[in-house]
Every structure is written in structure tokens, then in C-alpha cells.
Image 1 (cartoon, rainbow, N blue to C red):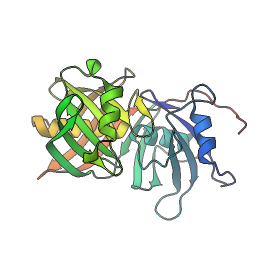
Image 2 (image 1 turned 180 degrees about the horizontal axis):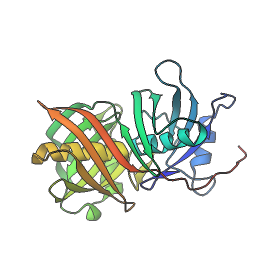
Image 3 (image 1 turned 45 degrees about the vertical axis):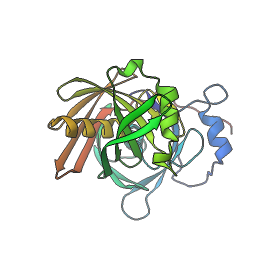
Amino acid sequence: MNGAGNDFLLIDNREEQMSLSREQIVKLCHRQRGVGADGLICLRNGKKDADWAWDFYNADGSDAEMCGNGARCFARFIRSKTDVGRGLSFETVCGVIHAVVEEEVVTVNLTDPKELALNETITTSMGDKIVHSLNTGVPHAVLLVDNADKELVAGLGAEIRHHDHFSPGGTNVNFVQVLGVGHIRVRTYERGVGETLACGTGVSASGMISAHLNSWPSPVRVDVLGGDQLVVGFSLEDDVFSSVQLTGPAEFVFTGNVEI
């Protein structure tokens, strides 16, 4: 499946008969030697707070806490495998995610963001950079730029992702260009993946930080590298974000069997 170009392998493991090693996940996600994906998500039964849950991994086999585009795809995948209605919820390590599925468009309620930090300066190989940070399930750094498509996303993104300022866990890095009131363009360098066509949690962090800095109301429209537009809704009071919603496409690409 793909959500705004951010693609995932989804596996129904409700019987919990399958356990993938890190090496197997890496091979499956490899774009030349495997199926190819930004991440892998397994559906399993929920244990306490929802009927379903996920096991979610980055393309390098590492555990992933949260992904907005993955959450939208996962919600639609659940609906394709069960008799659930348009509204559903599932467990993640970040908490329970609620979703509404309307054909190919899915809205997910993300967990409340935390660790907002604005206007911090870090030193890079390209000079001092002002960064803004927000954890939307995973940590994100946001840099405002004049033209997102002219930024050295791979190079500078990788450098900031491993920067001492964000140690020990590192951060995801978003390059944000303001297109108009309540409208931005974002390119994202993700931990464990590299640059992707879209990143839901990065889109959310970028939209909320841009709104905060520019005093925009909710929602914010966000154009991503894959060509789609996502919508970020939120509430903001006393520098605290809540009621975060991410709306965008979730599409099936193909189904099949693969030997591992």
C-alpha cells in the first residue's frame, strides 16, 4: 500500500504464526532484492485497549514508533480484512490511534504531540541553522527554507538526523517551504529510511510548527514530494497542541505471496 507515496508492506498476522527477523525485514523492504517498501507493518489482535494492533518496522529492520501515512494505510488494511465499519482504532507503542475510513481517504487521530522547541540554533557543515522541534509520536526537526526542492535533503538531512543536538536517538528532518497562508510544501529525511515521498508524522509536525510560527488557524494544507496534498488539523492553546488529525489517501498497490 502507499499513503501519499510513502509505501508499506502489510501482513495479516492475527494468528501470530509468523515472526520476522531483522534481516528478513531488510530483504523484503529492499527495492532491488525484495518487494520494496519504506516500512513493514504486521496486523495482530489487540491486547487491551483496541481490537487490533500493529508491529511496525522501518526499512532497515529497526522498530518504528509511529507513522501517520502508515497509520492511514493500516486502518484501510484492517477494514479490508475485517467487517469493521468506517470508524476503528488500533494499538501502537505511542497509544491508541483512532481512524475513519472513507474509501481511499483516511483520517487518523494522532497522539498528542510533545517536546515543542522553537528557534534553536545548531551548527552544521553548511553553517548555523535554526531548527524547530516537535515529537508527533517520533521526534521531528523542522527547518524553514525558501525552496524545499533546492535543499540538499539527503546530505543535510542525514547530518542533522545524527546531530549531537538530537542525541542519542536522533531525529527526522523536515525542510518546509511556505506557499501561502495555511499552505506549505515539505520534504522529509526519515530515520531508518532516508528521504521518502511523504512522511505523515513529519507533515503533522511541519504543519503545526508552521501554524504556530505564523499564527495560522487549523487546518494546514501540506504538499509532499509524491505529489499529493495532506491536511493537518489540530488545536493549540498555551503552546500545547492537541486533537491532531491527519487526512490523506491510502491506496492498495498490489497483493501477493513472497517466499522468505
